[in-house]
Image (tube, rainbow, N blue to C red; front, side):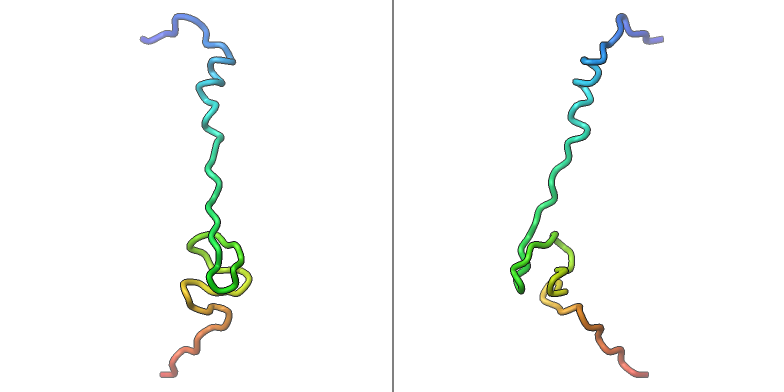
Length: 64
């Protein structure tokens, strides 16, 4: 059975775990229509467009 030969100090243990909390910041794009900042692959909150389509008003469903 593997047993550590000596105690690992708190400083040495914390050094090993120090990079766990570092996260990358999300990238920010500019909306091509209204030039507002938005997250990529999401609807622009100011003009409600995504990929050139206006999503502010729902499209009419075809009648059967």
